[in-house]
Structure formats: structure tokens, C-alpha cells
Length: 566
Image 1 (cartoon, rainbow, N blue to C red):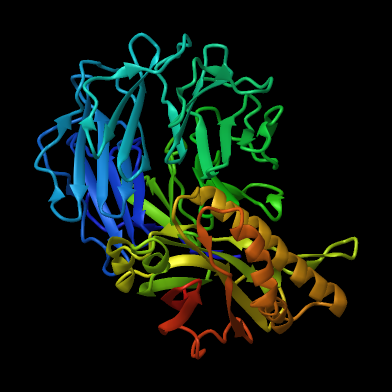
Image 2 (cartoon, rainbow, N blue to C red):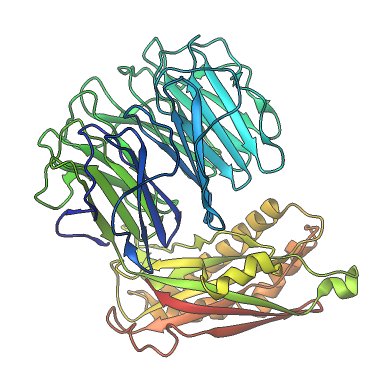
């Protein structure tokens, strides 16, 4: 469930900023937060936090002579070792500055290539992967213009208009990259409807802009757009009735038929900025500066839907009612908020809940399947399915339900540049909510999914594994709960999953392998049982390196992992 810090606090440093200056926050890893704001001297100033050292002693100007109006700084972390900043300059060109872990900040700001000029507006900057940056602004001709950078070729020679006849006022463009091969843009049109355009790596830009379905119309304002996973988009705007309205898209169903109001009685004055955050794919958090000058929030979860109403973030601090809130989630169990205070210092608070993490610490390839089959090293990709015994619950109709969570895919884990960083910074493959309501003792099971990649479609391969083994695990757990006829124990859930290891998983995997061009290994469940919420400390399986052997189809690997409470 998690808790908010009891009170807001000032970010360390003597620097103060004019009221109305937006704070930009970005997290390049779960151990780093960086803040940016245009200072009273019109230079861009920064402050940063790290898990190792906490907050830096004070704010400092980003190197360079360039100065800017007090507009938002666009900041993008395309990976843990790179930051890119973008601001429209006094010459109406877009200027950029960048930082890398190897060399620090570049010596000065530089104009992004191209002849196009723009009014002073926020730059919509997005990194769809670590090797690509895309920028969007509304041009003087009221069309949306774009520029892009790739690690292979650098910047394009000039800006180009996004295809389509639609024109817009000079308001911010909302740009979202829901994965490395898709971009979606959103702007409120002259007809007060939200318009959209999209790009894919396969087809390029759509031929024209189109209105998002629904009869709702809105005042001119930035669209708050969010992608909580590659198959979903969520939009939010402040409606003419002063409620927050939303619309959503899914890869399966397309757009919802119409907009609807986010539940709750709270209303907000026009012009208020809506801030979104998605700390995990099944969760959305919204923040708005309230009419009482407190920050208000509501949330949505895949399990429970929307909260019944908005509520104020705890704390006595109040802020200018027109000041935007910035939110950043550096990991699934943590949120940080930042607002410029009435004393002109930057203020912060945070939300946190304890989680149990299954982390990868290293990967060792002892014997390659390809050494026998193809004469080369393996390309090994790993994912997982997770089950928390507390998710197995009785439904109102007397049947049982169980939640099986998908982990992210990672690979090639046999490559040094993938696995070597895990020695100092283990990779979180699966995460469980310790504070989740439910009975104790409790079990947490991570079922490893391993694919040795040859010529197949990895995305399709993992989707096949998720569907087949996820369904098999869910059915086994529900059957055990139904047989027990009462609140099922953690040991019973773990036992139901463990019983699948070997023959049951083998049988399903044989069917799957016949349809895949890649080699799918039989899943391996790894379980830890905990007696109570205070029994993680001192648990023999916690906070120490463990090893799981994987020996199938001529391949022999060792996966080094640990269980870690965060």
C-alpha cells in the first residue's frame, strides 16, 4: 500500500527561483534523480540526488553561456549514463546541452541543426530507445514540426513538418514513445477536440492527424499523455466542468468510445497543470495543484480501478496555485514530487512502499547449445512470471482468482555489456509488494523463462511463453485454492507451482518449442516463504547471492540472483 512522507521539505541549496518557473525532473536509473529549472539569471540550473550520497550540496548552473526565458526545460534520460536538455532560445531556435557519465557536461549549449524557428514554448522531447531522440514543436505556420537524432547518424539536417493538414495554436505538443518503434502525438485543436498523429518504424508517419474519439471538448491546454506499457495510452485534460477527464487506447481494443470524468468530487481552476506518473504498468498516479494551494492526487490500479476521490498529499505546505507539480518514479515502489514553494525554494515529498525484489546478479555460460547446434555462442534472453500468494483470493461468486505478473525481458544476458553492470547494480527482474493486504505466512515465486535466441521473433516467443505458462500457473493455483476451500496458505501456493516443475512444464514446453524458431527452456520456479511482514530481516534467503543452474538441451548456465527488500 505504501505511505507518504509526513511533510514536504526543501531540496538542499541556497538557490531561489522566480514564482512560476517550472521544475523538470528526470530519473536516469532507480538510484538517480536530476532536477532542472531556468534560474533568475536565465541560465539553466541543476540539482541531483543519488542513492549513495543523497542530495548534492547546492544547485549549480549547467555549463555554458546560453540564457533563456523562464520556460520549462525538456530533459530526457535515454539511458542511465546520458542526459539531454532542450530549450527554445532567444533566437527562437532550439538549443541543446548534454551530459554523459564518462565525460560530464558538454562545454556549452549548441543549437539543434536546422533553419526552423519557434515561439518560446516547451520542447516535446522523447527518447524511444537509448539510440534515438525525437523533438516536436508547433511552428510559426501552426503545423507540428519535428527533428530527430540517432546514435548512428547524429541530427537530421533540418526540421520537417509532421505529415497532415491540421494546424494548431502554439501550445505544447504531448509526445509519447510507448516502445522503440512507436511515437504518438497529441494536441488540442482549434475545434477544442484532442487530435492525434502517430509514427511506427514499419510504416512511418500516418497520412494525417485525426481526432481522438469522443464528443468532449476542452479549453486550449497541454494534453497529459502517458504510456504505462507498450500496448496502452492514457490521456488527461481539465474539462470545462473543472473535473479531470480521461480517454484511453489499447492495442487490443483501440480507443474508448468517449472521454469520461476521473471519479471524485474535486474540481480545479482552469489553467491547472495535470501531472501523470506510472511507476508500474498496472498503476497510474495524477497530481494537480488544488484550489486550496495543496497538491491533490488520485490513482488507478489494474486491480481496483480508480480511487473513489481525490485527496491532498500529506503535509502542511502550500504553494502558488498556478505552480505546476513535477513527479518522477525512479522505481516501482517510489514516487518523488517537486514544486516551487512560496519562499522560492524547490520543495519535495515522496511516497514509498516496501517491495521484495528478485534481482539478477550475473549470468555464466558453461556450455552453449550453439556449440553443438550452430558452432557459436548462445544469445540468451530471460524473463519471468511472478506469483505472490496474497494475490490468490476468493471472488464474490465463490470462485478463486490469482494474479500472475509478467517480468520485463532482458538480454542478451551472455553479453558482457549486459551482465557486467549487474555486479554493482543488480537487475530487478521481478518485484512484489510486501505491504499488499493478505494473509501470512506468504510465498513469493519467480518462475524463470529462458529463450536461446536463434532466428525467431523474440517478442512473439515471450508472448507465447507468458500465455502458456502463465495460464498453467494460474490454473494450478486456482485449483489448489478451490480444493482447500478456504484462505490458501503461502506454502500451498508455492507447492502448486512447484508441482509443475518437471513433467508438467516439460509437456507444455515441448508443444511450444515445435512452433518456435528459438529454443525455449522449461521454466524454473524459485520460491521464498516468509512468515510475516517483519520477518524479512534476518531471513536466510534474503540479501545474499544465490545460484540457479539451468541445464537443458545441451546448454549449461548459471544464473546468479538474490532476494532484496527495497
